[in-house]
Length: 156
DNA sequence: GCCAACGTTGGC
DNA sequence: GCCAACGTTGGC
Image (cartoon, rainbow, N blue to C red; front, side):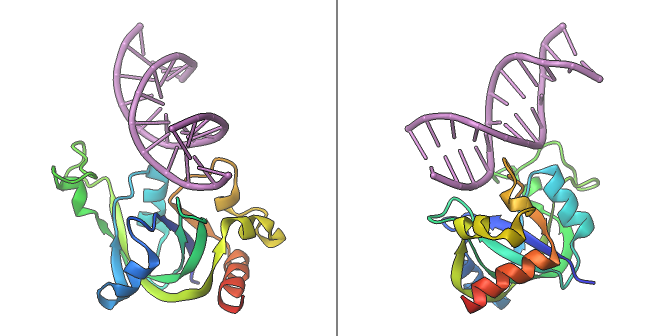
């Protein structure tokens, strides 16, 4: 049974249009440096799971489309690269600390579904994204939440 | 640019 | 094991 997720990206760094232009519309989702998000990536995400693509620090912040998990977790090479912003001196190739998955664009929404709209939807009352102080860059999404957001994004 | 909220680190 | 300090996230 496929699960559903939400990933955040700052569009000034990597937007859904960047994903649409990527080879095979697929990118390696790297740079996650939070243990809770890491655990979800590494232990819970499976090929075929649905991924809501969310633009954070955007104007306005919004869910902008859907993607899929195209490959399960593998070690994130940037943790071993001393020149990378994501370098982690405490990690090792024998026991990598950080992981990433491949994300493939499914479909961009017909229109962005803004954070304000999400907050206004009763069906999303318990959504992780909308919880006070929620900062996880990889989050679980329920099937009902997924359906409600996709309906708005694809059908207006 | 501000600031609330959170995660991580490190001193003790 | 506690907790203060610090860095980061992300909405506004």
